[in-house]
View 1: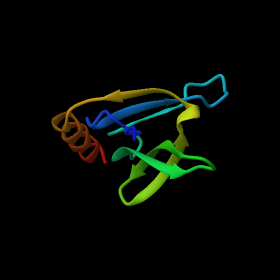
View 2: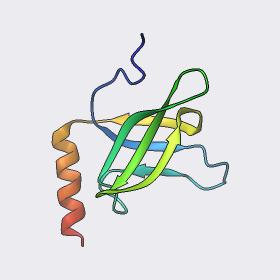
View 3: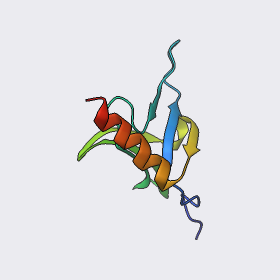
View 4: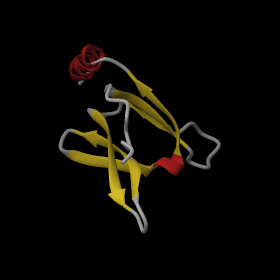
Length: 90
């Protein structure tokens, strides 16, 4: 069985195909985003990879792989630094 999300590094940002003229994406540490995680949901014939965007305990958005243009990875230390900067700007 293939691992749907083989890269285990933290996700720092995603670009979304929003079918708009504007850039659509999410970055940890900006606009309240605290975590971006890989997950999967059951499809008709197999599990489908998804990405969830979190603002604290609130799931802010969820996208299937077909709507994701790019996924950007980083280190856990960078994630913590971004979150600290976000907390300071409040």
